[in-house]
Length: 318
Ligand SMILES: Nc1nc2c(ncn2[C@@H]2O[C@H](COP(=O)(O)OP(=O)(O)O)[C@@H](O)[C@H]2O)c(=O)[nH]1
Ligand SMILES: [Mg+2]
Image (cartoon, rainbow, N blue to C red):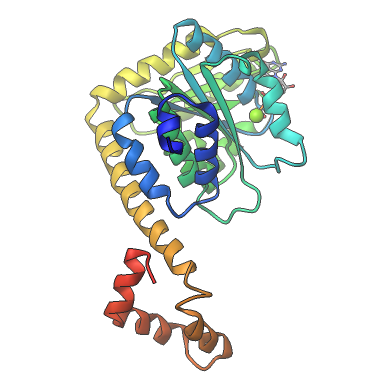
């Protein structure tokens, strides 16, 4: 049996190896994902984002508990900005989620952002697809909500939960980071702290200023460490999930995401094949560009004008 067959048969080691291939942008990834596609399409993806330290990992751990209580199998992807080698937050996430580390129905994967130029959202999506084909009912993706990359990652999720804490200035940060725009459920965690109610009111006011849509974003109070508000959060996620399956706009957005995924994987695969030629078939041309003997644009046009070369490039041969 090859890796894909082993993964589909329920082998966790094979699953982890395929995830590493996605993380390392292996050239055969499109072929792997095409093979597993018929086995997927069943899992529901929930994104959890917000500032560092807001309690996302703790909430994920609690949500996993709720989902497991219902008998659902769960995959967790923790996208972490720190290095896996420095310990740091990845280790912290592991500890926060350790309740479920030994549960065979829960698969937790950390994905490091270090040393990556892009493609993080792509890798996250592919890892989610692997978990889906593996048979996980629900997939939780945790990411720090700080920049465009994180907003891109949250596109992978059907329901996005934005987690905030009652700290001065947090509301403004949320606005600036564009988090309010992507939230389907807003959570004020650490409700044991002062200002939680005020922040909830502030957020509700901000939401009212927006044009009305078919889904009204609820603002919930939670206290993840003491397991408070988790059932309400799970219920809000369920409600949004029901909404997504019936709402026309949400379905159109999902359809649009599928087209973007197609274009993205096509572009990424071609880019990979181009890069693989830098020291091979393109070497003489690259040397001329490097020396300034050929300008980059004319060089690109030369490649595009060579039909036979293009055919080999697209085939991934030669
Ligand atoms: N007081 C309080 N602390 C919390 C709560 N939820 C999480 N924490 C703590 O906040 C810290 C950061 O939590 P973590 O889940 O790692 O946050 P993340 O960075 O968003 O994943 C940890 O020390 C948690 O124990 C809460 O509801 N109340
Ligand atoms: Mg965390």
